[in-house]
Image 1 (cartoon, rainbow, N blue to C red):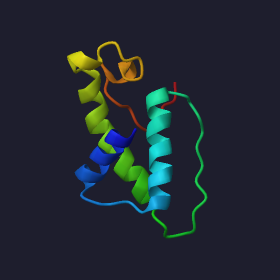
Image 2 (cartoon, rainbow, N blue to C red):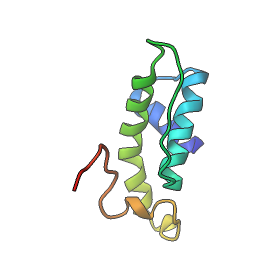
Image 3 (cartoon, one colour):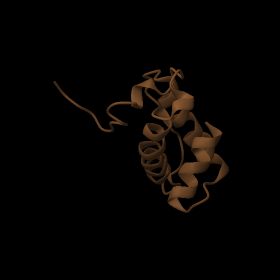
Image 4 (cartoon, rainbow, N blue to C red):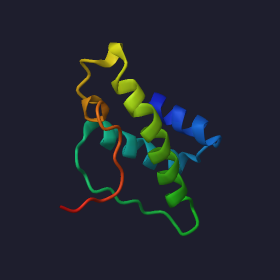
Length: 94
């Protein structure tokens, strides 16, 4: 989680505040564990909620499929979701 978080900050060329970092790492953990949790965040207006989500989603969309297809992570169950289709974002309806 911490390494993916660091990559996300690096990709966005920004440093999140501690309160944003805590929320961001929880988002990453939820993605890796594929827990299906509905997450909410209680922060004041203009505190960077959407900014935080944008940084994490864009960074994870880049790094997770790359990690999932590396030979050293072939047996890592946390990444198998991202092997073939990458990271899908948004809500889909069938």
